[in-house]
Image (tube, rainbow, N blue to C red):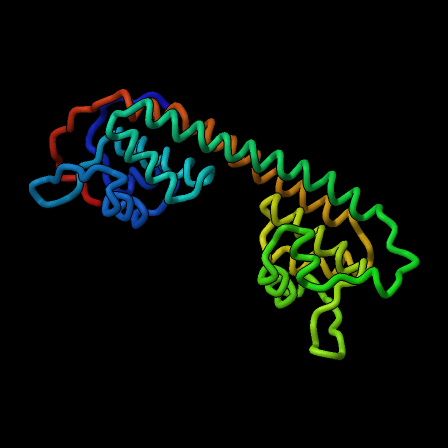
Length: 249
């Protein structure tokens, strides 16, 4: 983040350009209480300050790291000047990213181990019911039914009662889906990934997906680091309002 210095009042377009967002988003941030309402010129135009521009730019970076809702909360807390609260929220965000990173590593190891397990010489009594599989994975049976509807699992149906029957291959798929979900992998990408794994047995696709997840976590972590100085400046600085001028928005 750049050092804040006093300049002439800024137009809404100036704030948007510095933050890398749209003029409408700047107005939305004011509406949501993320940006303090600026003074107005006699003609009614907004007269923004450098501190407003810093807050908007910090928000944009933060949103990439923690999401829009959390970013708005952080900016509001920083504007209130409560440094301890800001640091506590940032620490929690980093802790969540650390947990996500660890879960990705665990999922990678688990997927390699699961796919290496032999599932040959299958016997009829090797199959599992939905209740048995749910208990083994420690998930509700409704979760397995949802994965079934989404095409992540393709269990057969018993003739009597049409209950789901999970073969060892189905159990393997369910274990992989479970690990990837724990690692933060979303349903839509899994919907495309699991059929490929079943048809071609390409664990490299899952490995590549987990690497992409790693990169996403890295980008969010970098965003938090980049926003840190802006948050601290907002917390510790109080900028006097500049006098109004006839700047057009």
